Image (cartoon, rainbow, N blue to C red; front, side, top):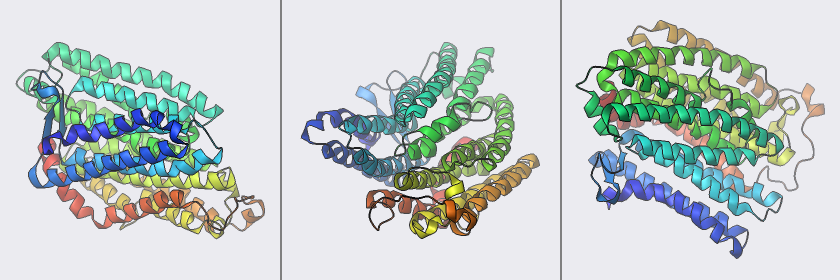
Length: 494
């Protein structure tokens, strides 16, 4: 049974995507219930896989019993097992959070949304678990197509944002595919482990360097790494409010994990050249951390502030990758996990405010805590973690990044990290002021709340509060998470 866990995890959301349209005739609620149930089963399998990997070690599955490198391989270790749990957890939260939105306008075709959201989860899980570079591309395209659709479902502005993302995202995917082609031409293999073995004893050729260059561009676009981020602010701002937390919180992080897999596993034998490419990634990340933070300070739309903040936050991940040492990679993976929870929580809060008031202009947030106290509290928890306040998860990921950079003697990264964190504090504390203390804005505060005494439906409050709790737990249990990641990180950073 254990050897089948990787494929079973991926099949769960794929099955949900296939069956959601088939249950539409049973009523508007059937696709939502089925989608939540099947993806919930996927979350359970991901948790079982994580527990198994923690006890017994990595798990490998060969499709159709075709042995690697000829067949497609799926592989689970401690890093991607944790990421799979995060993907399915945030995916399930997004499904639950979306249900009130789908009921809001009495939509008859909510099964389309449920199916596409499940495809997004399937694509993210497949990219995380695959051990094949071309199969990674297949799941990358599934993820992208689902992302385009969910962004377009955000309305007229969402359609324009999705088209822009489609154009730029296609360029990114093309660069990745060209990198795969050059890599296949050099090694004659598509299996990640086999490619790493074949590249290890050889001199670095021009073909391999070209492949590395294409992978940096392809992953950089998909991560929205500065200055390849052009599609991201509008896409995150205008995506369907139920899907935006998964898109902003998780979708951009899996290509970052892909960059870790490629540069520290596939190209491990070419460390001198890898470090040159990672220096470029580090400089791009530093610029993005400052640019994203400065742009976020100028925003008045809550979702747009979060979108520009994401440019800075993916810069932290890129910095950890560029540091390349053990502590840098620990910080990068911790920030992938922590930011998935933090940014998802904040986008859930933004979606909840929009659901109740129809807008998210921060100039009208005066005394919002009076009508939405739980949502306001969750914003504070996530915002403080983004700034890096202990004992929340954001503090520990930034600490590992700073320590890793100092240990490698890259003090520029430490300086940029501190400056970016201070800028984060400026725009988040400004937001807190509007939530709790801005009495001048009270006269123009958000009006016309929805009927009912509860600030939000239970299905919307549950993901918000669960994400806030997860942010706290990831900080308190930081040592346990690091211990879990250590074996896999030592394997790629040594």
